[in-house]
Length: 251
Image (cartoon, rainbow, N blue to C red):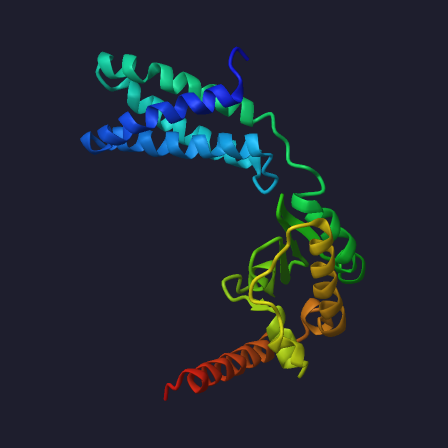
């Protein structure tokens, strides 16, 4: 490439003030401004070595957008085509650069390797398979039950599960603990600080141990298990609401 990624990103950023001033002039101008703003963020992710981004997926999404914009540009006056030609050319160079970035097989902070290690029992003991994978996590499925495991900033986003027949209804690790009378549901950290591989390893070991201890009926899709979980979840929610009302003086 004739220009470094840093030069290309800086070039795009230099266009933003003028593009922002023009964005109210037409829907096309607004779309170009937003597309450039998104693309410069992608460039910064690469420059920063951000391992959370699934670059091939992101590039695919960006290319669809830029193809649409290019089609629209061809229908605009010649002066517009000339004005935007350099911007579109530099955007294409960034996309070409980004599509060469392949996510690590181990994932962000080793999370994929750690999940494969800690939750290998899903595939060996319960015949789950990896249905989807991205740099921050995996979705497992047995065909009837799904388990989502992901690096996240909140514990509720790091582990969820449910019936494939009702994918919009999710359960969390505290539901499982509550249903089995395990008081640890009260002490789960609301916010996670998974900043190192050791943090990730320790957290997913905790999750795996809980699922191994209490998850057999869920993972094997025993009749009525998700109805029981739904009742436990509702009861836990009521308890939480009552506790918040007591603490904050609501009636």
